[in-house]
Image (cartoon, rainbow, N blue to C red; front, side, top):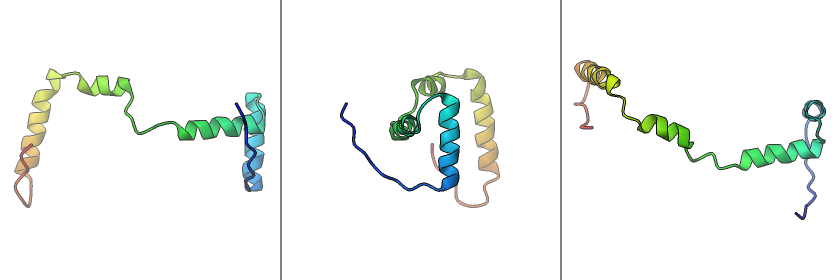
Length: 85
């Protein structure tokens, strides 16, 4: 893959920490920066499939607790009627 060169200014303490981390990982400073940028650019707006599966699975044992919670919330509202859910 073709590569471009870019120049950035970093505080000295950040460069020192970057070099220490790169050395600990056995990679170059550039490789560590590339990894960090790639990670930062990953699409984090989508929910993970595992999370969606976990929240999409019916949990009958929670139904009664949710009903009790909603009842308590509605009983203790100090203003406006509860919205219809």
